[in-house]
Length: 167
Image (cartoon, rainbow, N blue to C red; front, top):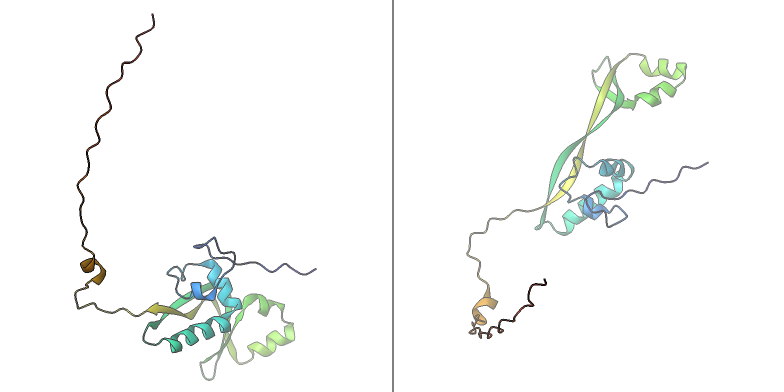
C-alpha cells in the first residue's frame, strides 16, 4: 500500500492550496516555518536553482542572504582517526538498520559522535536596500489642484408632533 503524498501549503497564505518556491524564497518567516523545512528537504535542488536564476536575471534588484537552518534529529558523525576529518554524517535510524558486518566496517579506524542537530545553510532572496537622498515629488498633485466647493446647507425638517402618552 502506497502512502498518499502529503500536500504542503503555506501557513501564512492559506488561500493558496500549494506551496510555491517564489513565495518561500522571500518569506520573512522562513527560519521558523516547518512546512518550508520539509519542502526544502525534498526539493533542495529545485529551490536553489530558482533562487540563483532569479538573482542572475535581476542582480541590480536582489541580493542573497544566507540563513542557517537547524534540523533536529539524531545523527552520527563519522570521524577518521588518522586525519581527524569528518567523513560523513549518517542518521541514527539508518545506522541501526545496517547489518553487524557493515557496522563493523564503518567503524574500523574511525570515531563515532552522536549529534543532535545538523545546521544547513539556506539561501534567501532579499531586495537591495537603497538610501533615498532626494526629495520625492509627485507630479500629478501639482497639475490638478484640489478645489473646494462650498457645502450647501440643507434646511432642517420641521419638528413633528409625537403621539401622546397612552393612558
